[in-house]
Amino acid sequence: MIPDYWQQASAELAQDDPVMAGLIKRYSGVSLVSRGDPFVTLARSIVGQQISVKAADSVWSRLCAALPVMAPAVVLASADDTLRSCGLSARKVEYLGDLARHFSGGQIHLNCWSSMSDAEITAELTAVRGIGVWTAEMFLIFNQLRPDVFPLDDIGLQKAVALHYFEGTRPPREILARYGERWRPWRSVATWYLWRSLDPVPVEY
Image 1: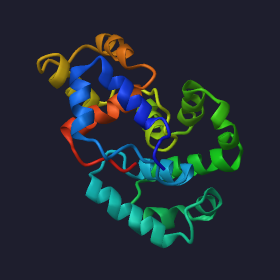
Image 2: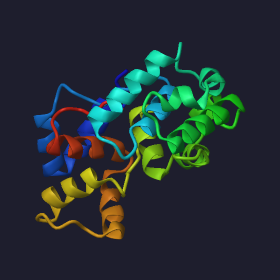
Image 3: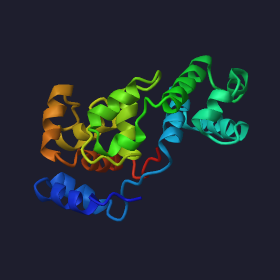
Image 4: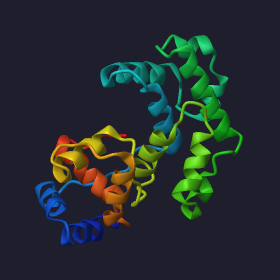
């Protein structure tokens, strides 16, 4: 699903920012796309922590083959040894179980998210063991298609802003935060185009 705000956001970002205008023109025809349901997306993010993309794909494939369906109740009903045999560390088994418990126990309010702020959803997600602010921000951008997330701790964003706006020097966090204000209320879109300038292939999250 392509965000319904994408065309408007791109046009407004291009108006007063020649760099952004150039990126938007260069990467026209592609956009942010939401994939997967929330539990699966978050489970996969836990699986992929601190390992290579190739290794994460391998572990995820084995996990999906071992479980009849990737769902909270199924994860909770699975023995730790079963999950470990797929290549998950003991800590990631704990994280996956905590995620499943939060979904099953109603601490994750999926049905309320449309009326909740980014900060409120982030607070829910980061209450799960193994999910930090960066993971929550990626989830808000890629799964929930929130338009105005600005992930200050993202290395790719930092590199791209340095490259295009600071002559290659990475700005301090507080300066990056202030600089990003120019892209409100479309900071997710600006971030996406900046990422594309480093890697033309859109990330699947």
